[in-house]
Image (tube, rainbow, N blue to C red; front, side, top):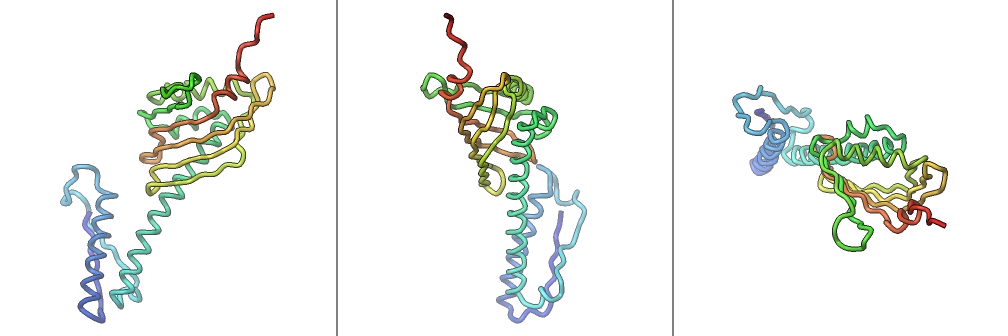
Length: 215
C-alpha cells in the first residue's frame, strides 16, 4: 500500500522537512498494518492519505495531526481489547460456550499456574481451542451461578495483553456459595485470545469441592 502526502504553503523548509519525516513514518506504519506478510508493494492498490487544507498550512500542525492520529489508533486498539476481555468474562457468566469459542484462537492455551501442592508446576494446562472449551464446559457444569464482581481491567502492550482482577461471586451446582479471588492475563492476536492464565486460590477451591468425608 503506497501512501502519498501533499504539503501546501509550508512556512519554512525546516517545518516541511520535519513534517515529511513524520508523514513517512506514518506511511510505514500504515503499510505494516495493512500489508500481509511477504506482500510486495506493487501488489497493493495505491491510495492517498489526505488532510484538510487547514492542517496542511504549516508543518507544525501537520506533525501534531499525524501524532494525534497515531495515538488515536493506539487507543482504539486498547479499547477494543478491553471490550473483548469483558465479552469473554460475560460469556463465562452466561455459560455461553459458543461465544467463548468465537473469542478463542485455534491454537489458544489456558494455564492454571496455582497448583494444589504448593509447588511451582502448573495445576493444569489446556492446549488448543477444544481443550480450553473442555475446561469451560466442566466449569459450567460444576457451577450454578458464575458472576464476576469488582472487575478491574488493565490493557497493556498496545492492546495485545489484558489483565483482570475480580472477585468471584459464584455458587456451586448444588447451590452452595463459592467465592474466590481471580486474576487473569490474556494475550490477544487478531481479535482472539491466544494465551490465557487463571490465578485463583486453590485452597478455596479444595475446601468447597473436596469430597465428603466418609463416616
